[in-house]
Length: 338
Image (tube, rainbow, N blue to C red; front, side, top):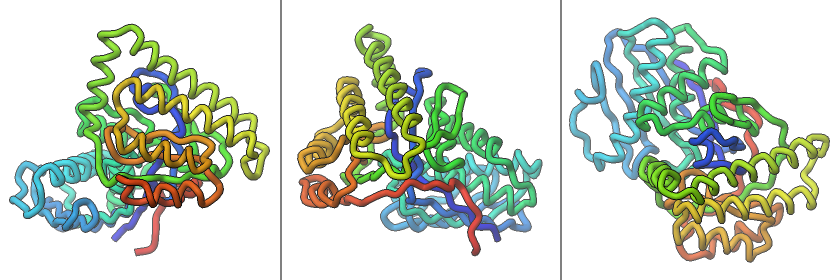
């Protein structure tokens, strides 16, 4: 039995624009998905997922998830969860040159599904790591991140970026631009997350931005402007490497860029009333800045605030189901004791 866990993430800057080759800076947070993999004597895969839907589910199948029996949870939840688990199993089998390997897999997660916090990436990264280690073929981090990206790329019909999976694998803050992925230095920023309890349709939202970008030159310019925001934010982070704790001046400048980034994303049509309400609640409470994180349409916002004010304000905001502080996860995927 092998147990691995991987962190979720927030976007400091750059979601959506990263799909079109602009840079992005996500940061791993200490909310994790845990995957346990136990090899079987046959080629079946049995998945028990207590946290990936309201009631949890258990599925056993052979060959592919298309052969699985009906289960008593909504089909879209099963499709979403099982698609990622199945893709992770295929990548692990390929990496270990074990096409008929079977597994008993258990998935646990404290990352809300589809909320923009990288839940699928964390499950895929931890799943591939656990399964390859269980087969005696552990991967180095670069190959693990690459295989996790290809798993998400497959499930998301070619609309995935490397950002989520690379960040979950490496931990800390990372810079993504096309296929160029590198960890970067960043102080332990005071993240506060607000969650509206919902989830946007990532594929639909990404496609919508693509259509706007094709139809209107100013939408393409907006995407490029997000890239400019990211580059400015990167420079601020690089200049602050020597700071043990982020200074108020740094937080104020980063927060202003986050506000710009949210405005640009709103212009591209990917925000939502609940997200805007949480963003403004955090700002009104004194946050240095706040923005949606992830694909948008529902899900989460991230704010910078070292005080308790934003978390408190969010907890009283209509439409906010949960508010919590999120520490930077300096360690990415890791093996844990079963």
